[in-house]
Amino acid sequence: MKSPATTVARPSRMKLYSWIVILIALFIGSVYQTEATLTKLVTGTPQIWAFIKEMFPPDWSFTPKVWKPMRETLQMAILGTSLGALLAFPTALFAARNVTRSPWLYYPARLIMNLLRTIPDLLYAALFAVIVGFGPTSGTLALFFFTYGIISKLAYESVEAIDPGPLEAMTAAGANKLQWIRFGVLPQVGPTFLAHLLYTFEVSIRASAILGLVGAGGIGLLLKNVLDLFRYDQAFVLILMTLVVVIVIDTVSTRLRTLLLKGTMKPMSPAAGRWGWIVGVAAGVILIAWSLVGLEFTGIQETAKVMSKAMLNGILHPDWNYVWLPEGEDLIRNLLLTLSISYLGNIVSMIICIPIAFWAAANMSRSRWVSGSGKIVLSIIRTVPEVIMAIIFIKAVGPGAYAGVLALGVHSVGMLGKLYAEAIENMDMGPTEALTACGANRWQTLSFAVIPQVLPDFLSYALFRFEINVRSATLLGIIGAGGIGTPLIFAINGFSWPRVGIILIGIIVTVSIIDYISGALRKRIV
Image (cartoon, rainbow, N blue to C red; front, side, top):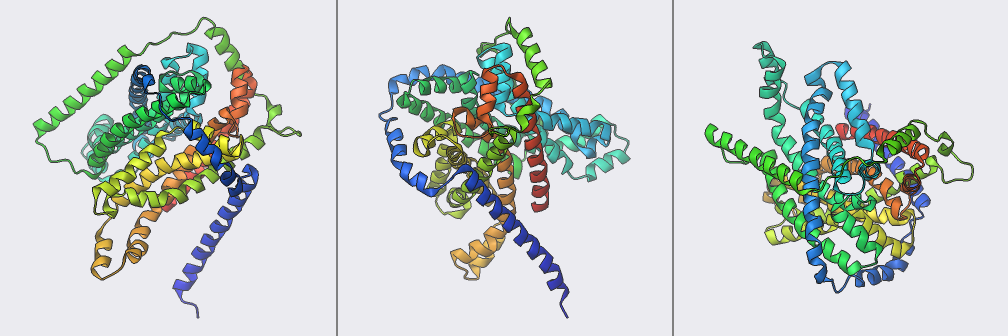
């Protein structure tokens, strides 16, 4: 007679095998569709080195021209992130079922939040550039919606995960809704919300480099100009200076987020706590004021009314004929290609970033210099925009989807490796110390104490990164790296708004489905 344990284990094992088969089938299909072969990469490696050599020696005389765009980028990120976060938190409260409790409120809030989040930031920048012209205004607005989409989702998930005990106690004591939120919700989600805000600010700095491709100001616009002139020595200077800024912001942000999430800040008296909040709020207000004064905002263009009307009319009357074309190069095929690029790029990054994450984790080595060097490597990788990486790989394997796979895969190593390293650093060291005390070697400790703890986080972060990669893959087609981005930018540049409308619908539907599936899987994993 079979034991209950065997009966329970068999379906789980069969489910695991089924998932493995599905993932392998998707991998094979993605390789076939993107024409990704190791031979192409090996053959094209000399072209990569030749391109990198064009960056040397760096043109240091170009340095003074970088300061103003760099300041503009910081101001755009500060303003866009701050305003987006301010709007995101109330939306998150409406979207959380344990706060709103009314489907007439939380379903519309989630719908608006998800619709705005599915649109890529570059598309926001391109559309706003038509209305307000090129410059920091369109970039700031794009970063505003970009921040709103990310933080609203993370915030409402945090609100729904809070301890219901204090809320129930306050309800029993007769507290109203505002008191409920002020004393029951905010103390629990405040540190996490601030941590998400700091992380999003880091991402906004990097996103601004891509927004410049459509003239949205900042370092991105300067980067586009030097790339158009084939001044790769100047581009290298720009990347190096951006790297320094990002490392400083990343170091400060990581430290603050660790203090917020781990609660390792020293206890303070009520008076000191109030002064801490006052100083923090004052610093935020000063930075926002500096951004408002420093940016040269543009108003609505003279032709904006006509263009906006044509844009809105076209988007509301999409070109349904483009959904499927017998001769190819239609919406369905381009979206499938975009998904293949995202999936394969995610697989590449997952494989490469695991050893680097262990290298960068402070609790995996006895020397801070070792883990610090790993963190610097990850910072360097994620500082280089996907666009630069796509240009490098286009030199090697030619234009097309394979270059997009490599660009997304390598760039995602920096982002995913950072999250993996933080997951390793935040794990419980008790099992590791117990196995070490019992005489276990390094590999046994990793296999039985480390991997079982961090694997759920690794899978969850990989799924979350896949959602982001789907959006990023829609943009790489702009420079010839395959996917839906190519017809999208052609349609925008040609003011073919019905074509933009149908592509936008395709992106929204695709990203929404991916988000839903990924979110459901992440909840089960975690």
